Image (cartoon, rainbow, N blue to C red; front, side):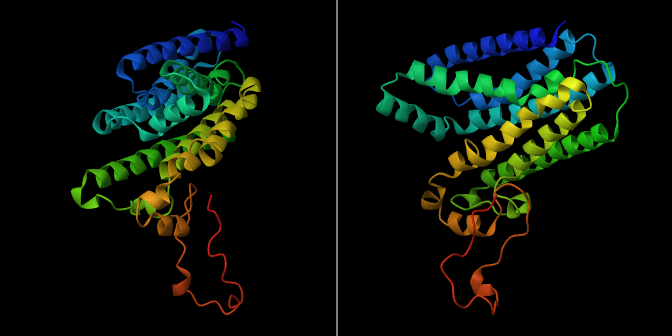
Amino acid sequence: MPFFLILIINFVIIAAVFAGLWLWSRQTKDPSFVDAFWGFGMVIVALTTFILAGDGWLERKLVLAGLTIAWGMRLGLHLFHRWGREGPDRRYTALIRRLQERRGWDYDMATGLAVFGLQAVLLFLVCLPVQLGQINAVPVGFGIVALFGFALAVFGIAYESIADWQLSTFRENPASKGKVMDQGLWAWSRHPNYFGEICTWWGIWLIAAETALGFWSFIGPAFLTFTLLRWSGVPLLEKGMKSSRPGYGEYAARTSAIFPWPPRRAKADRVDPLDDEDDTTEYDSAV
């Protein structure tokens, strides 16, 4: 089957799934569960490609599909459980209200276009590596690039899982109410789960990149990285957190945003003889 036909079929399937989810949200008036189906949707894409790409090398297909399924199912179940426990996500509530007030959209249009429709397109783009990487039959065998990619993807899944577990444990502790999570992996990164996700998808791309079509799927992890760093990840999640959560400003000042790095020390704790003239800027924006 031609690769473009596989992509078209996958896109139609994802569009149909997210259209159904949109219809469900019209009943619940809460689109927050869409985050859980971000992972589940990629599982669907991995499986449909595995079935449709009959000419691809079986072992590479198994590895790509297996990593995607492991990542997607874990994330989907984690987020679905969190949605059931915590209820509507205020980020979506604010987004819908803003679209209603500024553009005059009703609930159906706001969620259909800006939530479910947009996420369906983004999902399709991000998981290009698991689609294009399964199609080519050659080369047969894994090279050093694919082996490194496999190790990076496994590391990313494990890292993200640990970060989510640490945060869930922290939130479930009554003594943590109103406090900032700055322990474990979260001491070296404000969003270690995002770092794990980035590692996972660049690792999957490296496996796919050993094929002619798979190499061009770098747009998927590149777009994911941009999204988490500059669009709907860190910027959207942290908007207003410094003013609404005591201590978050200090935490953000000493802690890298996504990529793990040892925490910075407060300036008062440092002795820097070269820094006695300019005391206007303490920390750069960490990434």
